[in-house]
Image (cartoon, rainbow, N blue to C red; front, side, top):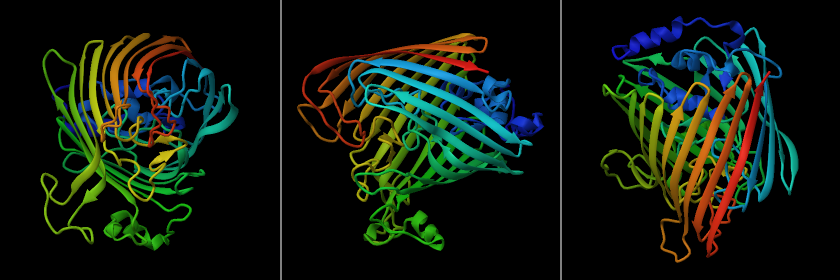
Length: 473
């Protein structure tokens, strides 16, 4: 496969035959382990992998086989039960592999039913119902539900869904660790061929919730990915958080001015919280390694540019037209040999990342989850993950360190040293995953809103254990 060109891979995508019933089916972003396998597959250097979710068609191309979720369209496709016990609720009481789960102290039970319905493969409805039970609530909700319209070169999504961008494990702009939110999204069906491969998505999202800054804001987002060769993949992000209660509203013809952001520094109608960033993935090839990837993400919310009214008319290094003042950066490495995978990452987020100035309390968040890096702003997080991947049993061991806030020196700064161990067992139609995590903390952060801090002095050890059991009908 080393000599496989991008053009051949592109043609291969078009040449694979699929049944009409899964033509418009998409694999939700909460299929965390499947997406990890795609990212480290032998063909990943030859395609674009930094824009999720994927169609089942694309997943099959990378893996060489179709995951169980993608094999058929059924009204009742699978059921899953997640049981967790958490010894203390805090800012780290989230299960990152399970989107939108924040654990309360004590017993937490999460039940999920999902399915899909297709009309000739051109229109698909996919849904997930979730019931969350703990000592404070027992709530049934539509966790995810969207309709996909399958056109010749594009997909149109309408409903509640998530999107994850960037090559890192979680992403620091849109991570998909948050609950799905209402959106309309256009996404390229397959990579376009333009001196390499080109992929993109355009999204309008709505956060329907009461908030402490401005309720019911909206989000514009555009992502473009370009892959000129097997060594390099480049992504560019642009997002604008705007509108909501007490904020300016716009006519449709004014949306381009909102998105371009040239008037953001004036404090007028078009002054919104915008984000701009890029990421790079570098694939290196060694005889004794299956995968060696180095990647970097840099997304910012405080941006200086000579293109903006009121900003100095000068160029900047290294981005020429843009200077990032407060940003989120992630550097990472993935190495795979045989069944062993090693993943290291270091992330730093700035003091106003995700809150900026117009949305200073909840900012770029939904249902108390940041859409960007899951541990929020002004944080340093590093981890080392070792995965042993087998056909029926996967083992994942992670050690990491979290520090927050990082922009000021406080005697009660929150520090967390943790270790996590997770097993994924596959037995026929069953999937079983035991989970354990231990956090050794100094000055625990009790805030359940990751854009804010509520730190109390003292050392604490937090124990979290659980079990996930899934069944495919």
